[in-house]
Structures are given as structure tokens and as C-alpha cells.
Image (tube, rainbow, N blue to C red; front, side, top):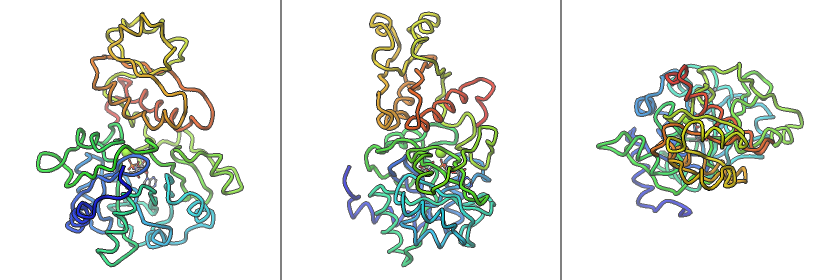
Length: 345
Ligand code: TXA
Ligand code: MG
């Protein structure tokens, strides 16, 4: 990955944003589909390109904490502390919105999701766009750059495959800044109710938030799922094929029962006897390390989806806080493939 986009490419991206167009933007978590958050028509185009319901809020990406103040009034001290500790980085804060955060961005809610990405290309675009507009507080409204309900993109090729570039596709410019180094979406901490609450686990772990705040942060329970946070809807992040999560020890019997030729597997290298593994439609080796697992997860799910396999089996990764975000995404992927939930997105 180049440290920053070539100047000519950056200029083109800035021009696209000024004209109300859409730029697929590499970030350290996943690729975003970015529009100028001040332009209502551009924000509306993001929803159309994704096929996302209009009342779902978008994250506004800003260059730094000073810019965040233009988008949120009354930022609680605890949120400021999290900005100091984790920005730029994979943390989104849900805060009371300012007048600048329009209904199209917030889904009509009185809160706004703010994130300051660390990826050098995202930083370069935010700063370049701020300079072009003569306003360092500009915001880029950007959801993940995938069709609604599909797997988030962690490379420019994923975006090309899913949304595509105009004129044939839906995005004005896809910036290729390499593979996303973290690979799963940001941790979301909600301050709407006063006390911090984690809405979506991510690379920044709950215990790191606890340590920064000096009090245990609340974890939103599964029963709190709501369309206000589509990333938390069961069935989000789902591949198109039925996906089953199971203990590695159950894997051989399950493969035999279903017939290996129909099955794609994501599991540790030693989870299946070699003879059985050889007959699978596709076997992907699950990294033993949580960070590497997260980085490759969405690419692995896409490869399984594109394979000849009709059903997908994923060995449940280890427990522990380092794995919490991975478990969350795998559970959603498995839930999304249940027949009863297949049309939830
Ligand atoms: O890592 C990420 O967060 C990536 C990159 C591109 O920054 N973005 C991302 O965006 O995952 P998206 O739209 O796919 O998911 C953002 C989540 C959604 O579930 C959305 O509902 C929630 O953030 N969100 C945004 N604003 C919110 C608000 N005001 N209240 C509650 N949830 C909010
Ligand atoms: Mg998304």
C-alpha cells in the first residue's frame, strides 16, 4: 500500500466529491462508500448505490477530533477521552448531532455517528477535501462499500465486484489503497443515553474502552437489535449460501453427513483428516491468530461464496475478548443464511 494516493488521483477524488459523486475509500477497517456529508443529493446517492433503506444512519468520517465538534454539540468528557485514546482509528462514537448533521445522514435521529479513520488514504482525502472546500471540518458520510446486507469489502476488487465503477457500475471513483489492514468494521460506542454502550464490537476491545473510561462500558444485548443500527441486524454480513458455525471436533462427521463435494470449509489446518479435506469443494485454512483471522474473514467468506460449494461450514474460533468481534460477525453470517432470515436484508 502506498502511504498516500498519488496527487493526481487525490485531485480526481476531491473533484468527484465536490460534484456530489461517490468515492470508494480505503480505510483501516473496511472500504467505505464516501460522499460529502453536507450535500443532501450526494448522501441520497449513497443509499441508492447500496440499496440501503433511507432511515438508516451513516457514519460521518472526519479528519480529527476538532472537526468532530462541527458535527456534534455537547460531546461528553468520556467521549473526548475515547477520541484522545483511539483516534485516528477503528472507533465510531454515536453522539448528539449538531445542525450540520442533516437528517439524510442521521436517518432523522438526534444523534450522529462519528469516526476519524487512521488509513493514510482516508486521511489524505479528508484533508485534501477540507483544503479544497476551505473548511477543515468537512465530513465524509460513508457506510461500508457493499450492497445492503452483503459482505463488507476489504479490497478495491471487492468493491469493483459488488458495486463497480461508472458507467457500468455505481461508484464514480474506486480508490485502490490495498487490503484493509484490520478487516472488520469499527467498534461503535453509543453515548446517546449518557452512559457509554458498545453497539458493535470491533478491533478496539471492550476491555480497552473500560480501561480508557475507568468504568465498565455496557454491552448492547442481542435483544436490543434495531434497524437504527443495521450493522447489528441479525443476518447482516451474510454470504449468499447457508453457513453453519460448529465446533471443530464436529466438523469431520458433519462433512461426511453432507457429502464433502458440496461443502466449503473455513477451519484450522488440522481440523479435518487429509483424505476428507481433499474431497471438499474448497478448504480455507483459518488463521490461529485473532487479528489475522479478522483481516482475512471477509475475503474468505467471499471466496467460499464464489466456490462450487453449496453449503459452508466454519469451525468456531477460540473464545476470549480478542475474538469477540470475529464471533459477532460469524454469528451474523450464520443467522443471515437461515432460510427464515434470508430476506431480512
Ligand atoms: O469501520 C467502519 O465503521 C466502516 C468504515 C467505512 O468506516 N463503516 C461502516 O459503516 O461499517 P456501515 O454504515 O456499514 O455501518 C455503520 C453502523 C451502522 O450499523 C449504522 O446504523 C451505525 O453504524 N450508526 C451510524 N450512525 C448511527 C447513529 N446515529 N446511531 C446508531 N447507530 C449508528
Ligand atoms: Mg455495512
